[in-house]
Length: 441
Image 1: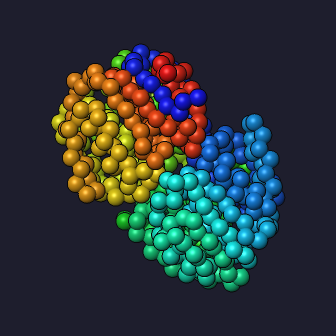
Image 2: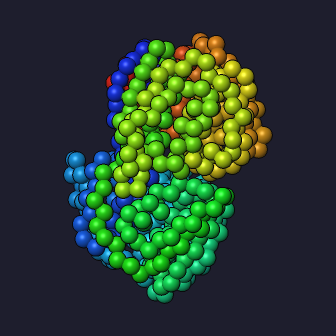
Image 3: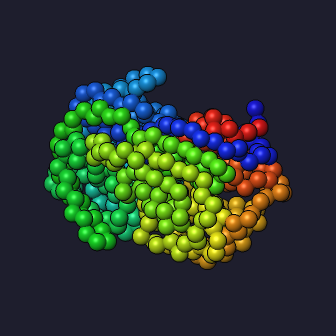
């Protein structure tokens, strides 16, 4: 079967209610922490994507017992440093940067060498940002010029450290937090603002963590060598996956959509705040707290008068996975939109800032990229009549899905390659598009 799709018709008006699968970041973090817990942890609504399945596969190689049923997943944890595995094993993280970086934090106590590999895209990404702080715990690394494959050899006496995280990377911060669990003493992390799923899970598990929130940084203190209790958890729906359907709705004609019980964690809701500034018709209903996370229903309607934006950089970290979609919204805005300070966008599965510009160029939207900034000259009357081909984007799932949304809302004849890329994060994406009325060949 061809690994590409064709879209030749914009989506017709719809009025629907949908539910989105579990949050990928939380699904991976749940599995990693459950592997360190005492006894059985159970999750519901676990995302069954390749990234999460690769996480479970890696944990099984490390001797963790896992039962994966249709409607739940059970992990039998063996406690901190409870991994039992053969010598010289190899762990394959596939396309998942979250898995690859976080699992290294759990391996600083490994008593034999472990090799970590990934796919072509992941093997292009920087891992020095992880190996450098983890070296300070006492672990040893052999890397391919700071990239995968990586060989880690742990230490029997990890040291607590003080670490300055200055990129706004939740993966770097979380890897150090997980490593800190295996040390004697207190690790102190002074981190730029980023997603706080790990901190919330640590707090829910009553692990000895203290978070001091400053204006520009968070100071996180973690004490190690503590038992972790079982974590029974219904994974909230993923806001990054929901974002595709939010943009599909607001760019479509005469459409309405309700997405149920989405994780609107304040460290992830920059996308929603940016859309509100742009005048999008979006409402948040039925807010509640679930084990530290904020969840709510999201209601979206078609929006005709989209405002251009000089996007505040304070939202960048909390919207980093949604900028390709925000570029599509800016394409229909009246006036010039300016997005700045997006260096982390090019540290993803593909250089997404460059790809965002390429897609806009193919659509006929004038834009200008200068280093880490992009200006987008919106055209509220844009209707695409030509043929557009999207390929050679390092199998980046978000490039594929954003291109699909563009095709469904702006018209034209689109051929989008690497359909299987969605399996890394959102396997049911095309099924949900069809449920809303989209025609995909």
